[in-house]
Amino acid sequence: MTIYQRMLFHAGILRAPDDGTGGGGAGDAGQQQQQQQQQQQQQQQTPEWFAKVTADPDMKAWAESKGWKDPATADPFAIAQSYRNLETLFGADKAGRTILLPKDADDAAARDAIYDKLGRPKTAAEYEIELPDGADTTFADTAKEWFHKAGLTKDQAKNVTEAYKAAELDAVQAQTTRHADEVDGLKKEWGAEFDKRVEVGKAAVKAAGMTDEHTKAIELAIGPASAAKMFEFFGRNYVDGNPPEQSSRTPPSFANMNPAQAKTKIDELYSDQAFMSRYTSDDPKVRAGAMEQMEALAKLAVNAKAG
Image (cartoon, rainbow, N blue to C red; front, side, top):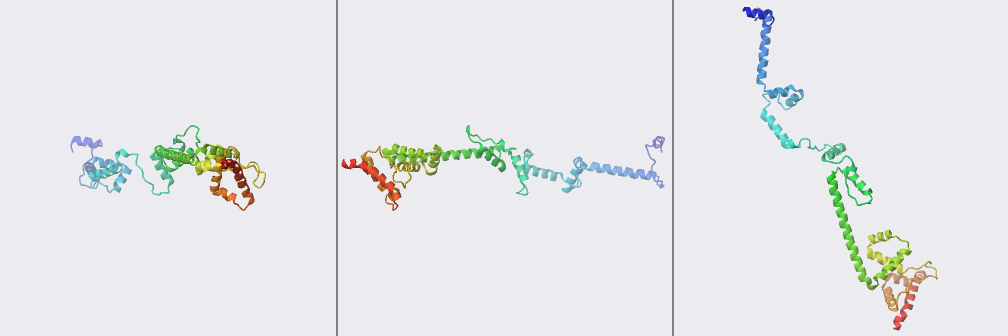
């Protein structure tokens, strides 16, 4: 041992070499030095990336679950390929935008989470439905609740609403066309008496205390032509003030008819099955009204026969 080595030895920096005497001091130092060398060799052999992976407990557990327990089994190509497959499936640009279907189809919470991620508004009130000024909002508010329960986004709800409005508009236009065709047909059927017979029907409606809403509802239910015929029939056969069983009834007014019109009306009544069933009824109470009507027309038609 040189003087320099002895100085280092006494300073505690350098230990005495093992002389093989079994003293233990020098032998332990050599063993520790050997272990340090082995560790250094292992560190030199372990890639830096793998060292970082194994330094983190969670990452280390994940790597071992993949079978990557040491650098020899951790093939960088296999790791890169695994990541590439994952990126192909989900895509780096899809991060945070992926959706996993719930395992249980009845899991309402899982479905709600999907709806929310797709863009469903937080509350039903956030849906926008355009309504005319003054329109009742009850149905629209109910529809918003339906939309929210179904998980619709605002755009989806708007598309459904627009489709429904278009269908309603088509239905209204079709109904308007159909009603116009019915009225045109009735004008041809009644001819010159159209306006007069419409007024007779209006008089019946007024006498019955019916409102415009009532008549519109009837027209929507059976059509304007059928409604007009029904109202006109009631007006034409209206008996004022007295029940049918009384003999002092006031017969329908034909004061505005000329003899020729009265004759035409008689011919119409003979072709009217409903009237003839009353006119020939076995019940005198039912027959009386029809007979009075026919008698009043017959009196007006006398001048026509005379002419």
